[in-house]
Length: 234
Image (cartoon, rainbow, N blue to C red; front, side, top):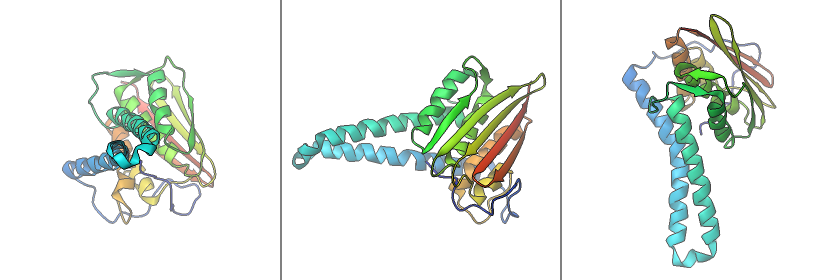
């Protein structure tokens, strides 16, 4: 999966990215970039499955049969994990209108198994997330985990009041950071000089929050990153 965490701007208490150089994409371009990211995420485990099948069918590589089977199993598991994550984080391909925290914890934990970061999902299992909050949580957790390229702990919390739901992600670890284009996306800014693959998911999270009438705040510090989302209760 795309690493959102390297080559950041100067660290400190930062909530704004550098000045934008391009206009925001129209819906067609946004969809194109999102599909490109999904293809990027899916191609690696898919290619590994094909490589494993090629080994199984090669008469001269039968001594590698166990390795091939293990490669296929591991890659297929990763691919299914990414698909399950994408269905909640990006799509409406599920008929469910609400998800338990236990379900979302399982999905995020599976995704974190492909990362170096450790997930601390500090939300009670029986808490129910409506679809907008579930979508925001999935993207929030992914970004928080990928902000820890050398490992660390990403803590996810939810707080409720009569008026709003607050989702918080705290990433602590060596070199915790975001790429400049990821910061731009989280601030709802156009992509400037970075890579669109690093920008699109943070901007998607910003869009999800905006559509729900909420707010998103990012704070960067040495070896620490926090993201706070407030979603009004309907």
